Image (cartoon, rainbow, N blue to C red; front, side, top):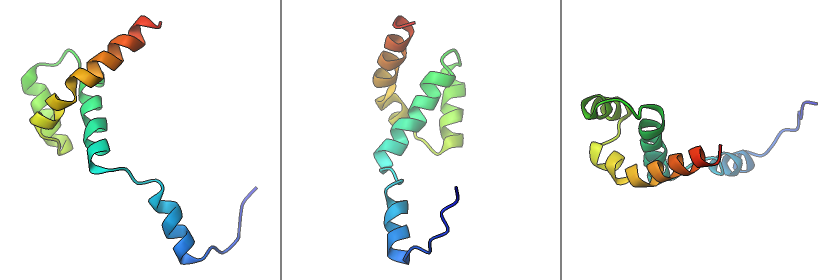
Length: 78
């Protein structure tokens, strides 16, 4: 079923704003990509991946413990 109603512009702006994330959440998720998807890569490769993603190495390290704990606990549940 397709909704063909014409929404007022301010309503669509509000609807879209509900799907935005904070800058810190964006950093956290990018860091998670590094720690989750590339766990066996060298530090040098991880630093390059961070650079490619527009993420500083310091921000990536700041979230390392969080992601490693989350990854570890998800493996225990299997």
